[in-house]
Length: 489
Ligand code: GUN
Ligand code: ZN
Image (cartoon, protein in one colour):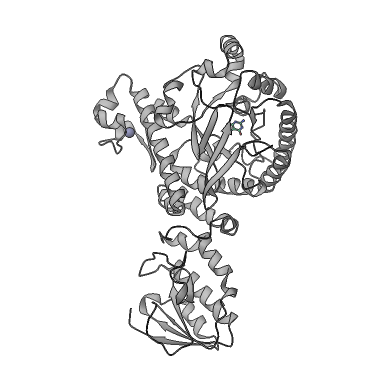
């Protein structure tokens, strides 16, 4: 079967892709607004106006209510919702995780999703929550995998089938599950049971779950982060390789009178100004928005506009090759997001393999940038520089004859590199003139390594004040390194 997911452009583990469904092509990353078949704050037929290309609804809610079930079976899901684009359907697993049971079997709900004409169906996986015992996680995962494989055999038409990755907080279970599902072959891989992590701001744990699950999958497989609807964390999740999100947040937050932004959420009563230029925020003053008889609907509309705005910002960043700069900005919105950023860079060895060799200019945005995959890649390639004779390491390139066989530039967070490579990505990075400790440490560790790799070469290092660091002593202690102190540049 030819792939239903084409990758157009990449940055870090993120990508712009095209997913082909029976009702059309969806460009990812994107968000699927959650449609409750019973309550619709905003009509599905209006969703395209916000930027939505695909919706998600719950087949179990439709299945359980006679009136909805009969109309869906008779006229189809698309007529029921009055939307002619792609629609994904969930299976009732979320209800299973909330109520402990559902009145439907895996076979019944798969059959129903096919009959009503869903574009992407989901089997009845078990969303095992975080922090349960290994025994429970493992037992429930076995049942989930059995059901998913049974569902794979039941789907005969053109409905795409999702294979949710479970495994609770056990990274080895997540990775093994992803690998097993990959071998069976699904069309979309949702990462499940992550809602409790997001609700408790455990974004660093979420990073580990995404990374472990991704490591078990074919990197070209489309990934959905189940239940993730707050735009603040989209950039991070996209950089880790998530392609689809679903948002009930736009409506749920609106019900609680909360106003979403890409930096976090406000209670509408706390807004003195509206920091947004969507049609709602331009039309209403904060006071009018608070008092409007339909303020829930207005807030839901604003929430949807900013959700899709963030998606476009992320796509442009992937296109330009500065997704990590965007991630580093967004992760400064909340201390727990900053933790998640640091956690993401503990996976730089993996990210480096997926990251394109050349992108737009690397911008150093803070101490975390010293751990970026590009910096790690530079460190891993130090063996490739063979430097013979004498070498002069200085803070900036020179055009004049230096009297040395080699001129190297010292640039934190990278370290010393031959000056002729200075225009090449990522060494053409924009970095602060005065580096932070993390950046200097990384640069000196690399420079020490370079001197050790070339023991026959005599290195002369021109140290300037702003590059002072405790590791200078270690560099100076090497038999082939001599340090001279300079004042410029
Ligand atoms: N919605 C939110 N999380 C999940 C999950 O783990 N599985 C399914 N099927 N739906 C979800
Ligand atoms: Zn707005």
